[in-house]
Each structure stands twice: as structure tokens, then as C-alpha cells.
Image (cartoon, rainbow, N blue to C red; front, side, top):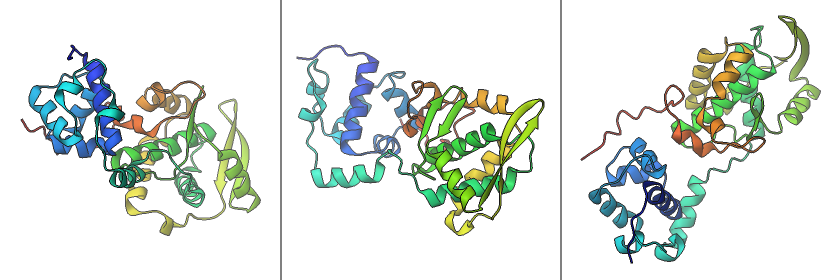
Length: 267
């Protein structure tokens, strides 16, 4: 029996079906012939969906419209999925980051090469430059840059396991930790003692890091912290918990780095 569903319920069901099929938002949006931002709005319950769009979705995601609109619709019981293909696709799209220690070290060294001489670049600014490099890259390419996990802490997103990595680099004479005074406040800074291995960084990765450095490396600790607190991944996460990379696809200006101009909605 069908029932009237809210936009939020429809969006939630579509998102669950998409994930069950192992499709990215970009892939599904292209198949349905709408823009990715439109799909994001539909899944978040902020945009209605017309009959033609719903029909296209039913074909691509493999559900019956009558079943979909029923009150007791259950995603796992209502969709046939090719297990082999689904498993392969989910592995490709999984958003759980896996830390690449060598990549993280080289990104850290590269940022410090560019910024260590700036008096404002202490731990707080450094953490945010790493965060925006990682999350901006994920939004643009749907792949992890360093695979670092970030936790929502009071002063902003902080990469996990950073202390142990830095201590290891100090022991190997790759970094030097210094304590300085910056406008009357104690500041911890890091100086690179070796150059980053640029062969570890793809051109696309270096480009994203360079843009983050260009935009934010002159900001004060307070300014970059306040900016990070307005970014959707931070806003949508709970205090003390890991920040989900997938939340970058819900960003608005000025945080979104992806150019959606070529994803024109086809009606």
C-alpha cells in the first residue's frame, strides 16, 4: 500500500539504494541526467523529485515504484544486487580512509617547506592546512590524498596519529620542533630538516596542496580555525568523533572546490 512520503524520507531511501548499488553521487546523477548538486539536495531532503526523475532512478537502482512509495519499504529486501559487481564497486568507492604514512610525511614536509618560515604557521595553522588539503582533494577526485583520519576537537579538525608520526620524524632528524613566542602566546612550530620526496606526490595532489597554501597559509590561527568551523564536514560531525570525508559533498560556497559548471541539469 502506498503512502505519502516526505522529501527527507524519499532522499534517505534514494541514498541507501545508491550506496547498496555501490554508486557514487556523480555516477548516479549522470545516469539520471541531473547535476550532482541536485542529487545532493534530493538525498538531503532539500529538493523535491519529479515523476520522470523517480522513474529513471527506479530503472537504474532497480526498485518498483509501488514498493518504493510504500510505508514498509525496506532497501535490502527490495533491490536485487549482483553481489560480485557490488563488492567490487564498494571497494572502489569506500570512504573509510587508510593512512598512508609515507604520503602523509611527504605532504607534511612539502607544506612546511613552503610555510615553515611564516611566523603564523604553528601547530594550529599546520593542522588546518593538512585538513583542507586532504578534504579538498577528496571532494575533487573522490580519492584520499594521505588517508589521514581527522577528529573534531574544540580548536578544529586534528589529524589522528599526528603526534606519533611527528615524533618518529624528529627521531629520524627529518623535523625539528621549536617553541616560540607569537604575540605573547606560546607557539609550537616545526621546521623541515629534509625536502619532501616529490615523486610521492601526483601533479593533481601537489596542485591541491599549493592552492590550500596560497589561500590560507598567511591566515592567523584564529582566522583559519574559525573558517574550518564553518566547513560542512566539521559542522555535521559530533564533538570528539571522526569527521566523515563524504560530508564534503554537502559543502556550499566558499568551501566547495569542485566545479559543477559542466554538470548541467538536463531536463
